[in-house]
Image (tube, rainbow, N blue to C red):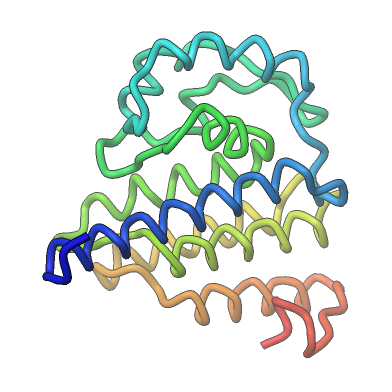
Length: 199
């Protein structure tokens, strides 16, 4: 590959894509998920429908193709359109990436709302480490707050959307973690300083 700007950009994009694929594979193999996954049968049935799409596919393309499909989790039944942002800014590299997203419906629904709220902001790129930090914060909050109807996830989700509307920018990932920790401590959940939420 040529040692010029486009060659270096392609190498960086390829490295980022490989990292995302590794993350997806690790997530699929992980056995200690804080929220039980959606039934495997429901996801198996979903994949052939996703194969008709050309990947990478946008959130809008996924919603158009399978948005009305429902998946069942221990928390209830969700339509795919409730879990995947209907936007061209959200992209999925493979059917496995869509499957990983819908495995945690509570977190997926929260992230959908954040992504769609961020669409109102000019020049906002909600990808990479900031997005991963938001998602991990929701996952950790879900794990702590699993028995309380996801009040923590909902409260944090509401707070982020309010911040977007009031300040016209996404709050930093550290501020999101701090707000999640504040919710936990206010509601009697112990958060150690060496944990993700322990800011």
